[in-house]
Image (cartoon, rainbow, N blue to C red; front, side, top):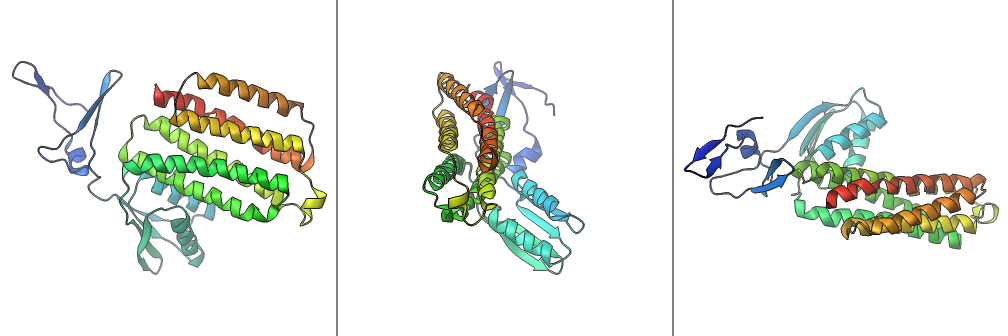
Length: 305
């Protein structure tokens, strides 16, 4: 998109705003807009809420469950406010209800007829909610790891189903954060979106560990003890994630030196372990978690430089 520069008087230069953008954000005469310099360009943004509701019609009749989950989740994250869905049977309708309840924060079903259902956002999604939602998604993930460690130490596996539910809450929060980033076009949104996406993947590892424990015999307390060495690695991995949480919200480039040294110590300890069976399976998930946590580094730096 190109605009010609208009000169008014001797020192004032003016360009016109795109009409679609003006309508989308309800820009009126006298409104203030924000200008930020970015490298060799300018970022123009508005604090106004989005204007027209964005809607879409889709047909999921010939799609399997996994693809439907991806499809609807993508539309929610993309920022659509109204989604009209053509479905084929009760199983698909049940899946739509499940996704709306578990992932689509602030959505409700406003219309339902045979083979057609309409989901609509009924809440205002202010960009000011983002910071609190992102912080909470980190804290929930960290607490999920801490509670899981405590279960392994005390062998109180009855709490595992409750801990696993926190992964679903993480999904709700990260989906909501990704939606806000897309709807409001945050500054440095690419790096911010990467951080959120990565956090959701990190939380999955705790769910996978719980799934591994769930595969075991009901007498797991007697038959499958978890080694102290593995629990120690688990604590180090969870603390490693907590350090990145602190780095994101209290940025200091020098902190990365300490964090990187901690990573080297963790790697040294994991490589020295000779594990098998359940311990080995859990360790594999922890190694993936640590690697994914390290992936925060470049995006966090880019967010704060």
